[in-house]
Amino acid sequence: GAGVSQSPSNKVTEKGKDVELRCDPISGHTALYWYRQSLGQGLEFLIYFQGNSAPDKSGLPSDRFSAERTGGSVSTLTIQRTQQEDSAVYLCASSSYSGEQFFGPGTRLTVL
Amino acid sequence: AQSVTQPDIHITVSEGASLELRCNYSYGATPYLFWYVQSPGQGLQLLLKYFSGDTLVQGIKGFEAEFKRSQSSFNLRKPSVHWSDAAEYFCAVGGVEYGNKLVFGAGTILRVKS
Image (cartoon, rainbow over all chains, first blue to last red; front, side):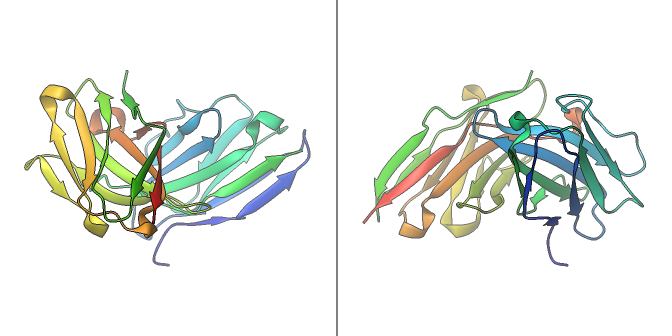
């Protein structure tokens, strides 16, 4: 595809359930980032993958959050035992060596 | 630690008027600077970026920004605003020293009066 895609676009879940959010980066981009956008916290970095290196997980807010990137392409962000404060828009971005990040449309997560 | 300040939460300008959105940053190394725009319900679109070189950078949609190291600023400008420019604008800083992860400002919501 031409850009970064994310699925689902919207996800409503009940407190305590697990959710998986998917990101398909631009083909050939070596770096992939997850950010979270919420009313109270603005745009926050969550996790970063670069090639085969160990991911930078320094932005993950708790151990309920995890992410993986399979085959250097698709990434899945998993949130276990969701809480209401997890409600936010989760944005994925990818970049090549230029450092310019291209963002997907986001997944809006609502935890009831 | 890196940080970005956008002092104006909301700005209203008349269509056809000039625009300047302010951005100040704190960064411990050579910064990469970005401006992104977000329309309601949409993702972030890159308007322009500064990596090095000429401190006045041109972007899409007629926007430009000037990097002023002495003031730690990267203000966004447009000489004549169009109604379609109404959106939220985010300034961001990043760099290879920090894995290129971006630190964003809180955003400025632009409203355009006709």
